[in-house]
Length: 424
Image 1 (cartoon, rainbow, N blue to C red):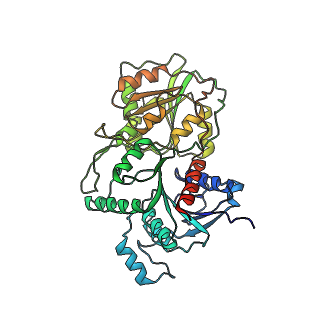
Image 2: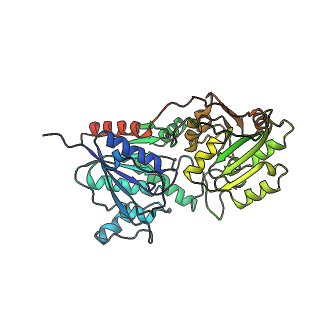
Image 3: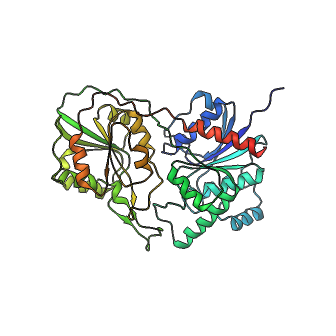
């Protein structure tokens, strides 16, 4: 009689049909497990079908879904869950209050098939982590955590209060004691997490590209050099603690605005590229303040603001661009290196297009440094970025620089090792 394939429960708020930056990573894990004849039970919200990242036929045949409502008051109790048990759980393991709190409460009380041998949770949202920990504890199986972004070790957004932040630190420390293994996306993230929980098994699993590449450029007749930006940009705000919330250290959101780019264009070190007039296209969401800043700027005429776009629009942007622009938030104290690597970084690399990056030292800088066709300018040096912009030329051929990497395969290997070592 053939052995029963081990099964995995994946707790993932970001999962198709939700079209989000976190969905592809979860999909790749499901697909990788499917290729190994491992069925996955995906615990996810009832997202409205608005398109997103499709799951291949091989994985959909080896996965089932438990979709729970994401609406309602925080700590809404599931009908079949005894009320006293629910209240005891609430006070013993209070949930993180975020946009997924109501859904996370329901996750903790899900009944999984008896064949499930490991629970994996993908975060953010961070309310999913203690909920998945409770789920694993109830079923007597090991817990694995996949940190797409860090929780308390590198905070780049406000939390309600300092007291809430300290509570989150305690929650994270408690959950990490239970975790059999943890995945992060960078070496900086790994070292920061090990400072929080020594002896913890922490593996680096970078994100994968979500596009096929390299991109074949489309023929163009205009005598211009096109630099394109894909994604969300921020305003020029510095996040500090105050009445609107708490951050452990001030965050420079302007580093992910177009302020450094506009400063570079005004620099005396900027000259028009030899192969054409520099034009800048932006596909994605912009704050009204940023849009206004660009429109009023002397170089605003160079910009084409396209708004939101579909995956097909992104492909079109890549095919008609000469280079891609990348930026990222930073800490006001530049000595504090961020472990975050934006998911689109790997799409940019996979495209084969030259990359112009305006960054502070951190994990993204480390991921790009030394790669062919990548020019990194320090976000605090407009003249450096100006010289890079001046050197951009018409794109004629793809740059082969990105090895094929599947985050799902790497994570599946870790998962199987956990199952074997835990003796499940």
